[in-house]
Image (cartoon, rainbow, N blue to C red; front, top):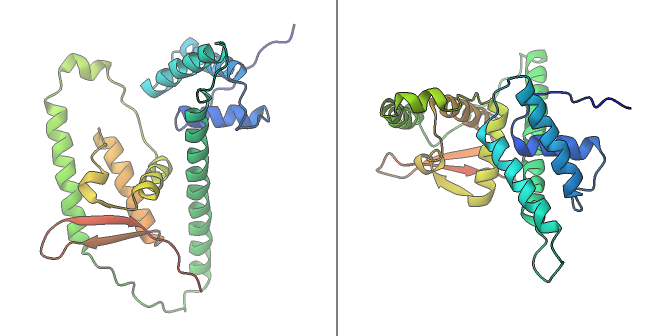
Length: 237
């Protein structure tokens, strides 16, 4: 009998794990055999548990969603929407955002190399319609809110809560996805969904990186401290 081998890797989230399984088994993302994928997904989760690995709550939530979709697929077919569609849409959107983040990372590395090889080139200063102090103030405002919220938490809840680490790449994808949908947003509103200081730091560093790569525009409402963030689209020549 062939021994099942499950490789435990570091995934950015449940969608990242699902995309890895889909790619590994050469599955058409538009026609996912939900039963097979759900079983493979659960095998990974069980393997993580057997190794006493911390499992983020979103992985457990996705497992429940997959089981629900799997059960719906067993029901008689009718004219209702394919139960897999919301999952497929989320996977496609995540795939696009991840590809964009990877593209930006490659471009950033290439630009850095070119700059290092040509130090004699004098670049014109980039004019920004904002001051760095305004960004720092906005960051500190949200940081203070999260710190106060953290102090109010029950000690038992803190011990049971998932203390997850966030990568800059993950939050870059998150920012691009949000800005692609809503185009332009207030800085405070953009970071409203942030629930931990670790997540805030990763998201803010991702924002600074996107500003440096000129993929995001930052503007300030005249006469106020309100900062707006918008996705910057390259001009056609």
